[in-house]
Length: 290
Image 1 (cartoon, helix red, strand yellow):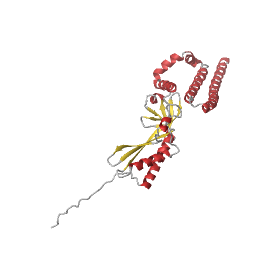
Image 2: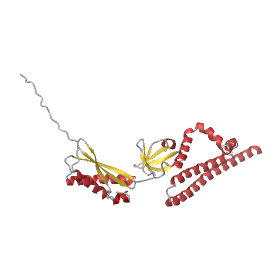
Image 3: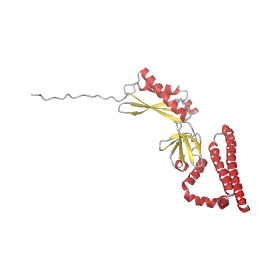
């Protein structure tokens, strides 16, 4: 009678030990995560350059805490104790064995490490992918990258996939953006007047950025360059090179300039051509009934 009672007591003690360790692991992870986020907030206020590395390190620390805590909890279960010891003592061997069964997941982790080290993009960078998706990098975890598009939706991309894509990074090394404002005018319109209007509207916009060097200013180079780039079939195509400090400003800048140029063109008689077609109807000759 004493033996079954002792086994039952031991089983309950083991159960509560495992439960306590699991709960303690979860609580410890939450506390460390909260403290780390406070540290991250203070650090990134002073320097945003290492935000990507800190965020990736956060995910790595959390994964390490959960792995160590759950392995320790498993070690109290007699039948699972060899597994826990193998996890702690033979992590390298297990990694090789698991690698054959989880190559894709491990590939995402390895790709994430290389992304953080080489930094083709970082958190808060504005990127465009070759499949047309674009947005702002919000997070880089162990397995995937989170991108917030301009409709406030989250695009979740595995690290192994995005690391092999051709990306356009608007913030890589330099965040300045040059917008090409292309407008066609009719052959009857005054080219000099049209160029003057485009230049004035672009230069007067508050988001236009002056990227000229001292030499350019001394040589009298205009803030906004406007040139004739093509004599098209029905239009003379003009192009203006307008600079903005970042991609977000560049989008607003382009929209505002296009609107203001159209209004100035209407007031000052510069015509933007549009397709026109002449349709003629042939009279059908009906045979006489007689």
